[in-house]
Image (cartoon, rainbow, N blue to C red; front, side, top):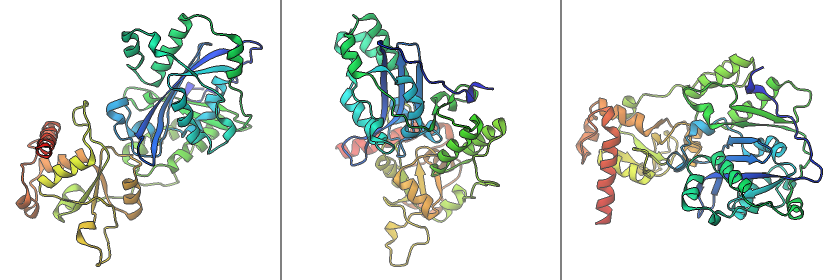
Length: 397
């Protein structure tokens, strides 16, 4: 049986002794908004030699996760929610002292989703890891990778430090809640082009009388139900899992719905909405407002809302929306959910700009243009960056 379906056994209890479990999370979102921040990756390293990591489906837009964490929608489309991952995580942290860099933030981030399954699932206490004891270079190195890299770094420094007070540690030990259900983890490397399926998805918790294949099929079917904007790349990946392990995830005879091509949409002089943060050069991200302003300089009409293409006559023209452009396919933003609900076509900003770079703009659009479109597909990142800089400098002046 492949590692892909390997079940993690419960850890043995060590009477009178407690280990360390260093925990770190990566989050996405705006902490000042009502939605707040949500976990997108979690990493745990224990003094018993266990390393655990999983991407987490935040069920929201990823904002600048591509730039900040190297995570894309491909990493989280089929990833578990924190509630789905927790049965596996529990086995690893049980009887360990939980330690994190920002305990109050960790408790808040965990509680937001764990309360959805059981309030008792929350850790009772997370002890603070004092980064000020580290040199500046060690502090920088701690954050050079993903969540697991940081968790493993904390553990390394703790093992070099003086022994902690055992009585205090016993007060902080995590105890399992006793829930009987399975869960799964999904490593971010699952989506790398050169990776194999084996070892990147892990089942755990109580599988009951079901086989690992049956449990995997149920859990990934649940993840598929959360997908808002399926595309061919995602469907092909799921088909590969179905064929490899003889399980059913997609609905029987499922086919992707057909969508009109970019040129057909351009010919109708569409009203366009933008969702997500675009990262043209990997170093900085452009908000949807900036990208919308760039499109307006091309002579395109834009809108902030997503409504059905077949809108009522009394709805003002400026509120119509014929096309939604996203940073990445697979986004779960509010605009994407509304577009999917109303049957509005969805494509990425780069797919759209590739069409603009290889085909002349229709006359009504070209007549309104204030700038020339990109000259080639390879020119798009530079062109997008220069146009964004022009808009930002104009606003500044």
